[in-house]
Image (tube, rainbow, N blue to C red; front, side, top):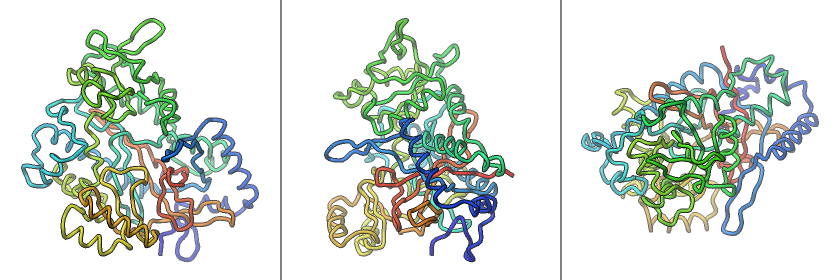
Length: 470
């Protein structure tokens, strides 16, 4: 039985949805469907698309938007935000420790092999102190819900979390379509995210910055799947959108090309992976990065957000140690629980996973976007057999988790309102003196009946997320 976030077991509206359901009962399906078409047309005019990459060609498409909001009470959000802040503080402390004293390894709380053999570890970051001590400037924490007060962290996204533009555009669309809803229901605003992002990044400016910080967004370019978001965020926070060929090292600073010559950059919000950031220090074949930028970074001449080397905290094998990590650095038990996880690199865990593949979700340790995973209950015998061989060949590359009974929120389907599974990605901004969490975040929804995969690359959609204010 799945937890229905909108209705209780008697079919009555749960408290957060009471006012919305009173409004909804007077609406007919035809008018709601008309609004959905309006939303699609708006997204197309605005260019809110993303690219799906296959072995053939890239396919540009809209992320399906469902107009039934996901509503979270002030009480629920208070607990979630405290747990998110605790987790993000622990992640930042963990990264500093890993690249400096490695006290958590010495204490035996995290195995040394998990760090030393990790492909996401960046040895060149050892001993480097990022400006303000911040590694994880922008974090997306993926949450799932299984009951009234049962929330779990599914994974941490501390490398280059995406999706915030959809959170903002979803709200803008709902405000445009249903202004009367927001005049009658006290929903926390999300519109100040771009301003908060700029302020947060400015607080992380390096010592080399002597004036108002110059901020730029580094994009891989037009053909990147998240290019729309890169351009959107640059415009919204008044920053420059640049590609690698727009930048060069000038007089010990990273500078961008302008009509007046080259202007130094203080903070670079990069949406380029570590490997491609600097061809002199990492992948020599990279055409996306800036030769020598990492040397300037190490010398304190620029802030790179998120810091190079943060990818190790996204590692799904490391995820299983997060309760220990939180306790080690905060001195408190984790407010938000992890999903129980089997590390397939361990013999007993691997044996259990191989025996129970039909019931488990198996993920690649470094996977993302819903790729490279097996959802056992939804997989065919042939798919399970093929995945079993992959798992045997490289057990250290996978973790497994139970198939959770994810909560549902209705979507507007052809037959009317129908339940679909959802998750939630709140967005967190970290600066030296504060942590800001946008109320709500991006709700992703599995548009296919019975599906548990919410990723847009796998057919998932999005919803506006409302956090109610007292």
